[in-house]
Image 1 (cartoon, rainbow, N blue to C red):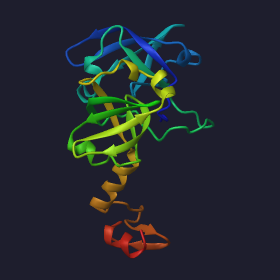
Image 2 (spheres, one colour):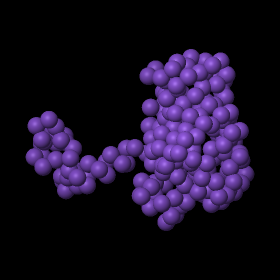
Image 3 (cartoon, helix red, strand yellow):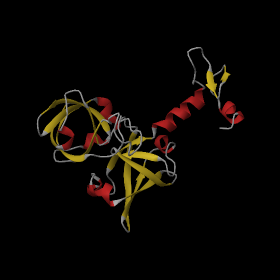
Length: 226
């Protein structure tokens, strides 16, 4: 589990590709301070497992699903990448719940300055747009950002100078592909409402102390003030 607050920008220093997978090596500093083999590190928002490490770099495997679903298929030696270690239970929760499981990709359509802020407009497919709402959360290449506006096939975020300066965003340009992870809460809520499968071990859902034998339904929530 991650927060979307980037700790540092690392650099890809090695890629060993196979037909549909790859072993990647990344140079870093801060995230290596307490790293162990088997730890999780989010690389551009993708939860990867550390397979080996030195004082200055770590390696991780990227399987077929990762390459197919994300922008990592375009990664090259020298590419900068956003890095974040897994969230500590006793740490501050500065961003939002980020699983590190990419839903898909988007394409930067426009970058526009707005005094101190920078606006990024990103187009993506309908199956991702359905979970993107104004003032909701979105992870872009692992960066926790707030959706500023939503259009039919795209959305925009307004980014403060600190975030821009401490992530890979300054190197982005229109046409670039970015990894997107929707807010996981919206996906779960939609699933429960559409299938009625929020159930206890006895096959009943409970809301405000009342049970419904068929699981949680939209009608049941309306009746109880949700």
